[in-house]
Structures are given as structure tokens and as C-alpha cells.
Image 1 (cartoon, rainbow, N blue to C red):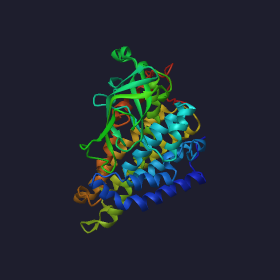
Image 2: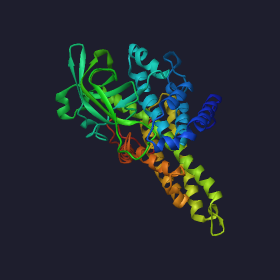
Image 3: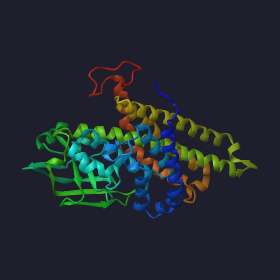
Length: 401
């Protein structure tokens, strides 16, 4: 049975993240966004002090030992202030740390997971390439075995924390014959260090959202990676990549929920201050309609990610539920941000108010970690029984358990 009351630990975590982000980040975020500046010391230092960088990693591996609901709560509170903060949770804590926790060897956990969970090292994720986004099998990066190591060659793009992270979970082809056939069994996963010879990165300056975050490209020219850095077994890269996305999508869903709440709160405040036709604009019926929709979307999105987090806490399969939460919450956040600009009128088009930043930031989440179209197809395929990871067709209205 799912309960809706947060535990004492969860409430304290939610409050501490809310207070820290309001005190330490919110006063500076507009300027950081304007300058396209990632404030590493302020952001990562504070998150490390709060234990957020290893929030759901067991204490024995340097983490805070909190549950998945705490991960979701932190993600929601961080994106309430700015999406760039939640991205760190998605990439470092979700895509990399939790994947190492489930797939890494004990030696890999000690070498990489422990310093990452403690915040001494920062981690990233390398799947997307210039010609491979939703179609993960289209990646071109290769990892050819030579003796006791693999030699990696290729380029990754749209990589969060590209110029910041110390370690990257990189997906590459280890079987060139299977690469020709687009057979995912030929993919493998590696933990790659920035210090490895032949590794380089750079910023992507073309983006128009999440400007206070770091996004860039990775390039690997004959990068030699020790055999010990192979995550899982050779040929398990696609499974590992999809597992990682389950963790990242969960934080994206929770974060988008925080953005909806930020839009709602900004609009309520503005609607009580701004007057037109002799009354507060909050008295106009169509303004009420937009604010009411934000509340409906917020409550629904929160319930969806809470259910996904509850399943994760139970150790139960949640790919379907996490996909639905990510799809709904991100699309709802785009609707909320667009309406928030509309409620603010001309002021919404000004950088003096936060809703324009919310509008620029929300769009990315509708695209990365599975576009809305990919998640629509996933949900339909589950109902129709076309999911390759299900042995039999599901019966309406069953959910994965």
C-alpha cells in the first residue's frame, strides 16, 4: 500500500534542500543564467555538504543512505529554483552513481562510487552522439580490445557536466560486426576518466536553455581504458544504458514537477499584484483557468513520480511507471511555463521575471532521456504487448509489478 505521508527523514531532507537552494542559489541564479556560468564551487560544494551527490547510495559506499523518494524530493526542490541544479542529480547521482551501485564490481565501487558519493569526484554519462539520440543503436563510438585494455574512439554530444565531471559512464561498440547489424548485444559500458590520454571535452554554446549549467561534447582519440573499467560484462552496454535512463528519467520527472510548482507560485504572486481593468488579474476567469491547470498538473505529476519512487524503494520493476511520469511531467511543465509567460504578459517576456527562464529551461526535458514521442510509443507498446522486455502481452489496465 502506498502512503502519502512523508517520513521525518524525508520531510527534513525536503526542507533542508528548499532552504539551502533559496538561500545560496536563488539570489545568484539570474546572473549566472545571463552569463552562461556554472558556479561549480557554490553549487557542487553546497550539494556535497548536504549529502545530495550520494543521496541514495548506501553509507558503506560513502553515500547518505536515503531512499528513492528522497532523491525525488531533492530533485523537485532543486528544479524549483533552476533546472541546472536538478541536472546534476540526474547525471551524477542517477545515471552514473546508481548504475555503478547496481552494475559495478566491488573494486569499481571503491575506486569510483565512493569518491563520487562523497562529492570528491563528479560523474557524467556519455550515450548521446551527433548522429544518435533516441536511436541509441546509431552511436559510432567504438571500444576495441587490445590486450588488457580497450581503445576508445568517438565523440559524444549534449553531455551534461562535460567540462566539469571527473568520470564518465560511456557506451561504445565492442563488437564491430554487431555494430554493422545494429545488434545491441555488441555494446558495452565503461567508466572513463577525464585524465586518460586522448580524452578531451568542450562546451556547447548554441543552447538557449539551462544556461547556468554546463553542457558540452566529449572526444576520445585512442583513449586506452583498462579492462577493469568495463562495467558489467562485454555486450551488456545497452541493458546498462537503459537501466541508467530509468534512474535519470525518475529525477527528470520529479524535477519537472518542481518547475511546474515554480510557475504556479510565480503566477499566483503576480496575479495578486498586477491589476488590469480596475481589478487584480487573478480575478479574470482565463487567468484563473491557467493557474488551476498548473495546480492540476503539479498534483498529478507529483503522484506519478511518487509512485515510481515507491516502486523503486520496493525493488520492483518500474520502467513503465517511470516513463509515464517523465512523459507527463515534462510535457506539463512546458504547458505551465508557456502559460506562466502568458499570465505575466509583456513582463513574462522580460528577463526581470523568472518565468522566461522557466520557459527556456523546460523544453530540454521534453527531449532528453527519451523524447515525448518515444515515451508515447513506450506506453502504447506496453498496452499492445509489443515491448521486447515483456514475455507476454499485458492485460488492461495492468501495470508492471
